[in-house]
Image 1 (cartoon, rainbow, N blue to C red):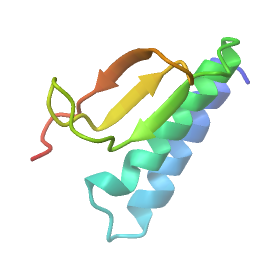
Image 2 (tube, rainbow, N blue to C red):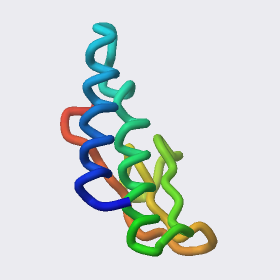
Image 3 (cartoon, one colour):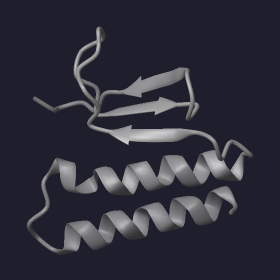
Image 4 (cartoon, rainbow, N blue to C red):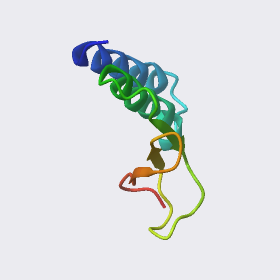
Length: 83
């Protein structure tokens, strides 16, 4: 999948969630998780795994953990505004 198509799908999914009228911040998490997975796959990194709302870490409470699917954490994503 090409980057433009990935972003188009992402924006469509955000719009779909928002149009329901009852979404909270967490309602959009699946949209971002899908975006990250599609990007990883499109760059030949299909082994990358994204965990939404993983358990607390030494860095705090991340919204997402990105790891190589086996034994190495690639990074954490903290979204602004989350309590």
